Image (cartoon, rainbow, N blue to C red; front, side, top):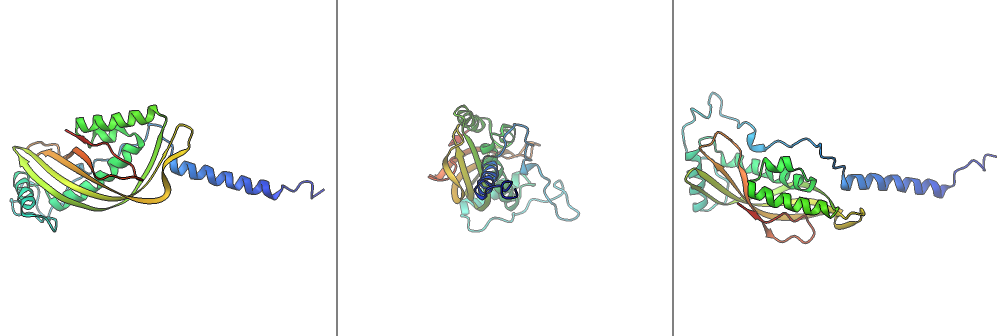
Length: 234
């Protein structure tokens, strides 16, 4: 009687495999239901100030600049700092790295609210168009930015009250794209690839709005295995 009630070992093995596959697919594709919390724009976070000082009483001085930059870039960053006493190049680069990871994740998730908070209107329209095309095709994307290994300032200038800073990003990511049937058609969940992009950030230094917006995105090196972002410009 006991033998008749014993569950065959092959059924147990198949059931275990099924559970693993469900968890794996859930981790890859996630659950996109449109109610995800919008991620905070890193440029709106308060800038730490030296003890006893505020942005209003800090005197303009040569800022601490990123290493290994050319004289032209240095001159541009100093010019921006003189026009905007709250501008800290080193902190800007860190915020830009955070913004890069947020935008990449939001694009994969189809998170339009987060993208609108970080992209200029024309760049946002390009990203939204790519998201709509993906959604109409029934495709889903999962990407995880494991880290931004570098964010190098390659240009900086002030035109009137508009400041522009161009950075070259290198980031390690995992990327998976599936079609309408759920079949993985690009990327791999266990493979880390490097994406290299050039972005231009801009801000009106006379505005009370502390946000820098991405006004241009372009591939510096065409990726063959990672997620490709739209090439867009204001």
